[in-house]
Length: 159
Image 1 (cartoon, rainbow, N blue to C red):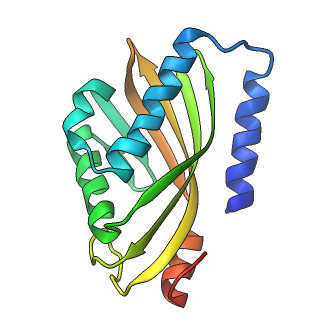
Image 2: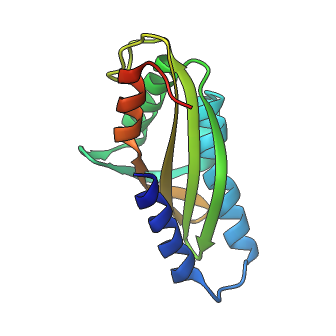
């Protein structure tokens, strides 16, 4: 899955090659990283109105989710991994799209989000792509290296 995540990132870079970084691109990239650093890593759900626009949709592997459902899922992940940390590896932005390659790490001590809660330390990579409208996120697509996550949980911990 790491190869897939990296390949997707390289594709995003190649699609945006030649486009200069504009102020709007930088602002959107900053807002996209806030989702991962403030909401996911720090559990700051009090600022979602600053980040998301009306009609937000998160497109997931099992369907589409509104902001309330997306926040509930994020809270379940934080409950499953109370020491969750997120490192931003790289971002690519072009016009109204931002791709963020990230690494999440934490200890699975909670039994939320379908996790066993057996104390395994894990580290997984993922990529999120955000679409912006009027300075707010209105759509999100996220890929997580679930195979690596499940392997680490099964084996009792990762890197």
